[in-house]
Length: 123
Image 1: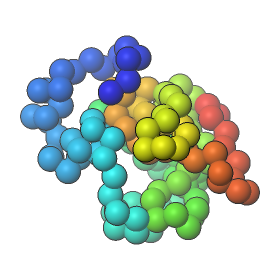
Image 2: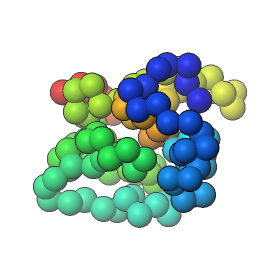
Image 3: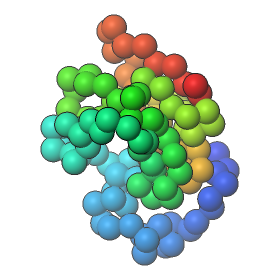
Image 4: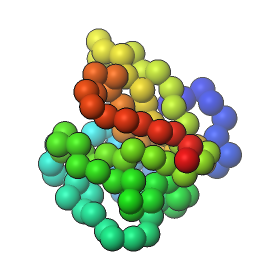
C-alpha cells in the first residue's frame, strides 16, 4: 500500500474483516477484475454519485462516467479532494494509481497512453 497517511487509518486486519475477499483483493491489494466483467462497467445512472466501496466517501458524479471502451469504469472528473494519485511503475509500465483520498483504497489506474482522453482532477 501507499506510504501516504490517509484520514481513515484502519489496520489490514480491520479491512480484511470489513471487506469481502474479492473486494479486499482489489481495494487493498491492488488486484483487478477481468475487463468487461465488473458490475459498474455498463452502469450509467442518470443522476447521483459513485462512492468508495470501502469507506463510502463520495468520489465521482454520475455525469463524470464515460465509456472508455477499456472494459472498466472510467471517469473524467472527481470531487475535489476525493482521490489521491501516485506514480506506479510496477509490472514494467508507468501509470498513475488512483486511490480514495479518505481510506487509500485502490480505485484503478490511468495509463498515460490514453489517446483522446481528458482527465481533470479535483473539479
